[in-house]
Image (cartoon, rainbow, N blue to C red; front, top):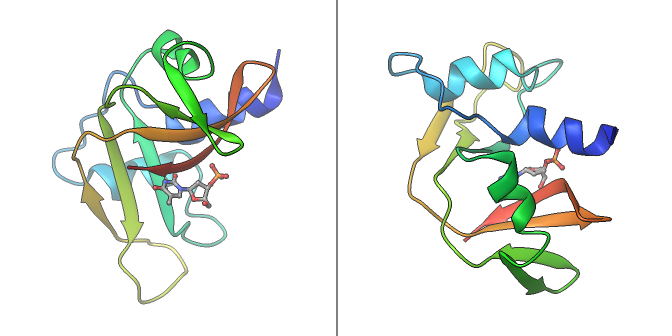
Length: 117
Ligand code: T3P
């Protein structure tokens, strides 16, 4: 229905959390097409239901400038490119601490991930 929302889910939702035997970011960033033609620098994956994520655009979120910040922590993994070559294969470090998510909503649909806090 909403292509920007579908794109958001492809880039930012991984539920249930994939298991890649220790190479979570390197594997999932590649599988989701985020390492071609260049290694994307930073990308966060949210481990939760579509309903919970979309809720941030409604009562589960609060205004944060023009964006929405979640009221509660989400289980997220943020992948940050380790540096070196920007060409694949891409190596990432992982931050697994639960954090607030900050997103852009469009007509009640998440369409852009801004940051985690
Ligand atoms: P996109 O707009 O494709 O969702 O900010 C630039 C990109 O980095 C943006 O991509 C979102 C992504 N990003 C994360 O996914 N997590 C983060 O914590 C930060 C800072 C950026």
